[in-house]
Image (cartoon, rainbow, N blue to C red; front, side):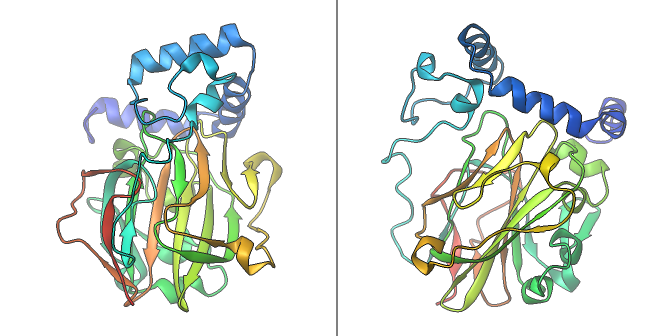
Length: 291
């Protein structure tokens, strides 16, 4: 579907009319239903429609999954994503496609051609972090349904702040991004800020249509139906529990969505060979952090 076409405009217009949260709650219930005749049928339909690569899955046998969601957030083999060799490298936190990258100039991030949105609105003006990341760098990575959906650490870091922002649940594909203003700042999102050597970096997990929930290894599933306002999420008081190494799992999407990486001014650089539309996998080198 081409952005700007009548079909694309109709697709976006329909999303304004849909009961987004009700539908997403329904999808959450169905994808967790453990009645095997239903879950196995759903998995096989998904395989036929999207053809995900199961060669690097820890459990490639689909009959071993009791629900569709167990299959969807399947674990990788430990050797499937070795990661960069150099410790200062920034690794991709997800499998997906780069939809935008660049500088947060004047506190603005690029959403799609001709559309920007503000860092302040993305982070919900929380905790002074928009000011800390203004003038830094960002990268937006879109996860398609066929991608692996666990989220990993791009760098070693200690969790210092986390919060949930309620919002809408538009699709986050390229067509919707081209048509819906402030898409990533309108949708619900979970933001986690980490520090390494007194330098912060952030991951913004953006919810989307049919995404039943997002979760982290600290907070479990964060469900929109249970949270009516901006919610500060607990940060472990034990520093060791809050610290994750590069490549460690930090969260997951229960259905597909988008991750936005934020670096502060002077916090690092992206590789100059990266470009919009490029596919990346967990562990691929995205850039180099400041040391």
